Amino acid sequence: MNLLVQIPSIVEKYSSYFQDLFSQDGFEYFKRFISGLIVSENKTIEGINRLFVLEPRHQASANKFMNRQNFDIEALNTRRVSFMQEHPSTSFKPIPATKGGGVLSIDNSLLSHYGEHFDGIYRLWDYVNKRYTMAHDLVTLYYSDNQTDYPVDYKLWEAPDWDAVAIHFKSIGVHINEQKWEKRTEEPKKWREYMRYRYRDYNYKKPSVQEIYKSKNHIAIDLLRKFKSQYPDYDFPVALDSGFTSPMNCEIINTELNMTYVGFLKDTQQVILAGSVQKSLTDFVTQLKEEHQKTGKVFQKTTIFYKGEKKTFYAYCKNHNLKNYKCKQRLVISFQKDDLSDTPRYTICNQLSWYASGILTIRSHRWPVETYHQEGKNEGLQSYQARNIEAIQSHIAFVVVAYSMLRRAQHDNDLLSSIQQLLHIEVNGTLAFLRRLMKAEAVAHFVKYILNVNTFEDRLLKILRPFFAQTAYH
Image (cartoon, rainbow, N blue to C red; front, side):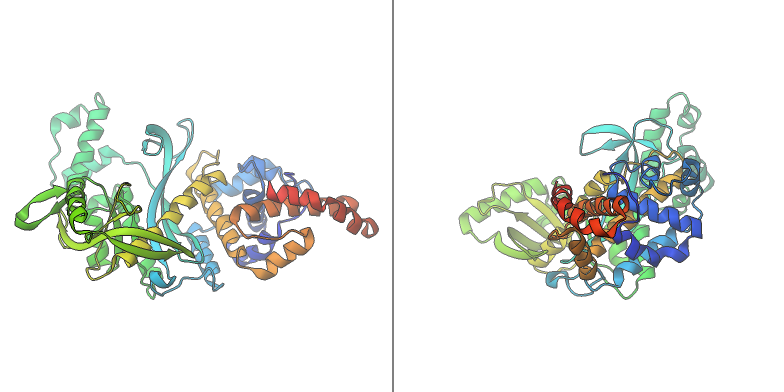
């Protein structure tokens, strides 16, 4: 039932934590939008506005709230992270990841839309579906430990203005081919390709260009810098996928930020062996497997514990020089099968004395951000239909708040108990189940409103409890 006669209990309990960030009217829209993201199937502004049957508001007012963004998104995000720190199960845990402590990870996700009339949308390559798509690109800094996980910070990537980049390069003495410059409007594709190469070659040598355009890698580093500035007492390791594992990123994380990183390598990466011999990781692992067949000692059985589950790997772990990396790296090559027949994974770390188990534990904590992006899309992360960038940013910010409220609710025994007493349903606490519970709760409150007669209320609620369960479990 997509009707609400009151704010869902999860939102009602937690929304007051954010109240002072909004005007009185804005706070009502905030609660409505968070409620709609949790309960509604239609997570657009229009769909959410239609939910509230008792106090309907004009659609134009809801649009104005989202479009004008009369609240501070940065302050909202900072408050959200503080909100998560108030419960021991969702707070940052400054203990080693091998003992259940926290890990940060960086990932990006395409928020695809049809049409070109969205501010900031760009034609991007979709690595999952192997095609180009019109999309926004969201870069997320994510926190994970054995009890919880949630976004810490995020930022939308902004498409480059290659003309502006070229003008800046010229002003600081970086050569730009004049013939390509003159033909940039006639041959835009060639111009973009040329400028990508120039940018790739000079964006770190001439960092002032980052004021004109920041790549996803720059955004990732900025998010880490910001985290270190806001939370100096926390020294979490950072897990990077292959798209963010680069010599420059690793160098900055290691030397400037003084953080531990665990990165994924592609099999084309060159490892430098004795006598300066270079081999791709694909060839190197073939060599190691041949040695293992003879000795049985190259890949060691390694056990880790991740979010309460025991996982077993067969891992090679030694320090190596890698092409284009300034410092030695702790290289872990791991298989899941004892006969080494599955696809190997290549992991590096800047802690040269760590065991494979610790490195693989941290690597495992990168997976929740992938899950979050997928679940987030299903629950509204890319459901916006608003065209201007302020409304898009507001929508994403509220999705993150709704997600965090649900994460917090998973560990709120008092709240879960009150919901269970109303619906007489055993609560298992998964996010998907909590969303369905809020839908069932909405049905219960709708029935109570319709009846509004205490004599019949308890009897009818008892009759309808199987319906509540059906709503929650399906």
